[in-house]
Structure formats: structure tokens, C-alpha cells
Amino acid sequence: MDSTAYRQIMETKLQQRSKVIWLTGLPCSGKTTIGLGLEKELISRGFYARMLDGDITRKGICNDLGFSEPDRNENIRRIAEISKLFCESGIITISAFITPTEDLRSMAGKIIGKSDYINIFIDAPLSVCEQRDVKGMYKKARKGEIKDFTGVSAPFEPPLSADYVIDTEISNPAQSVAKLLEHILPQISNSQ
Image 1 (spheres, one colour):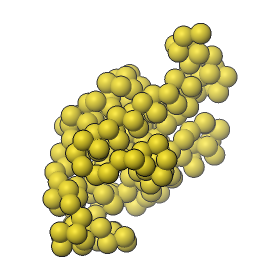
Image 2 (tube, rainbow, N blue to C red):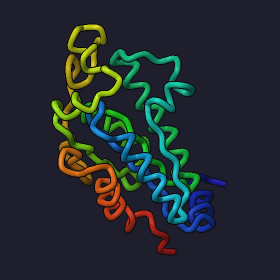
Image 3 (cartoon, one colour):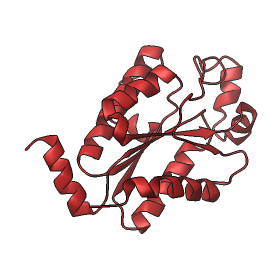
């Protein structure tokens, strides 16, 4: 059975339209918090959803990768491929990854398929992200203890064409999840 037919069967069975909701933003912008909140809310509403982030994937599928530019690129490529497989299986996938450049976001969109890829920019100023940093990563990066840290010693390019932007400086996590849910519900609700 080809992947299109299989997906149609699974979406009908699960009574939803699968999409990949790709959350991008600086470290500590709120991607994982919002992703987990969205996953919980979707599941409570009867949707089948799975959240992926760096902490999850670097323990397994990407544990052989470091943080060099080639390794980061490979990390995003692998996550996009996994997200595509979930999507083809009828699952709504929430992928929360820094994805710091337009090239990487474009690559993820091409792998997943533009019609299935919802690019959400979790926007927060660098100063706010640094205040939220409970792990002390920004401090270590500023001291030179962490090389190529996004936002400090490695660039972050804000998305030029995000499908939706959530400003976490002015919205708390619950508000952010509610806004995101309102935006994506029409795209994932079963209309078959």
C-alpha cells in the first residue's frame, strides 16, 4: 500500500488530519513548554499527537550527533524525516527545535511537504530567553564554555514567512497554547 492510501486510512480511522507543527525559536523561547502544552491539550480533545524536541531525540535517534553545523543540519534532517513518517501515519506531530536558519526550515518543509508543514515562530527577545535559562547555557556560552550557541556565538535568523508567530514575552504558556490551538484546529480537524 502506498503512503498516500495508508495515510488516508489512518486519518479516517483517527478522525483527524495529520500535520507537522514545527516550533522554531531561540533557546529558552518557550518551544518545549508550548509544545508539551499543545500536545496535552490535543490529546485531551481526542486527537492523536506526539511532541518531539532535542532532549527527546538526542537521547536516541540523534545521540551520535554533536553541535557542529553539519551535525545540527543532520539533526534537523532526521527530525524532519521522522516527523514526515508520523504525519504519513495520521499522527499530528509537534516538533520543537531551534532550527536557526531559513535554509534549515526550508529543508524541513521540503522533506515533510509544504502542505503538511506548519511553521510556528516562538518569538522572544534574547534578553528574555537569557532570563528564563534555568540550565545556565547562555552564561556558559557568554564565557566561551559552549561553542556555537544559537543567539550568542551562532546566528538565529527569525523566520521570514512563518505561518504563525507567538510572542512569549507578552503571552504566558497557557495563553500561547490557546492561541496556537485556535490557529491549528481548523487545519487538523477531520472534515471527511
